[in-house]
Image (cartoon, rainbow, N blue to C red; front, top):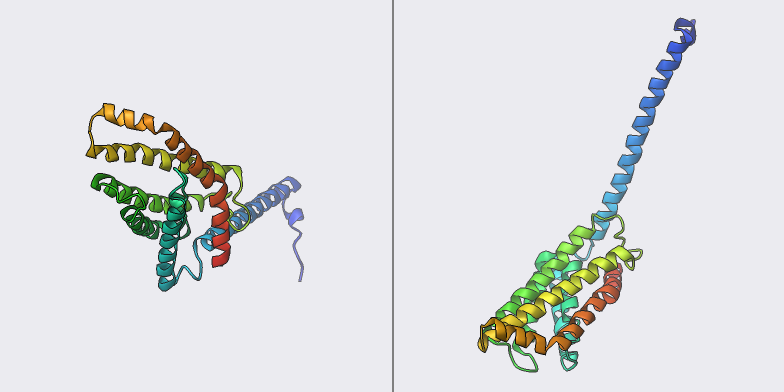
Length: 239
């Protein structure tokens, strides 16, 4: 049986052209396979970050809600006598980040209900009380939303290192924003029992500007330097 010589049947230029087309198609297919493999690897990494054998158990999630709520309240009481220094907010945000939006909101609601009603300095007046419940519930939900956002970013690698510029910047901005909004609105709602005028609000806010500044700086630094380490520690413990 005779084998045909492809280059003898076609002119040399045509043979080169067909060979180039075939090589190009093979290269494209190889490139697609390589890209597909990388995308699959990234998807698997995101899935591993989002899922934990422990977090899939409903009983464990309930226990974790109770643990985070208790920690937030206990740490809140421990630092209650240090003016405007707290990690109560951070613990609620952390709960949402580790679990999800729903559980984070539940932790925020439970812990703020206990802490604000049984506050060492007395319960908050009704307008402020209901605002605090809403604020901390949203803080827990924001933790879950932040986790969802970061899981789609290549630089989010909680099993390696979270002390990188992008992560620390995001956490710092979030910590500062949460605290600033809380201080503004808590002053507003707290002032409703005395006066609803803008003059009284401005006077109240300015009179406590030193304490609100301490609160803002303290929470921002906590979100930047403490939160990444706690996230890494908990995720490793849950593996």
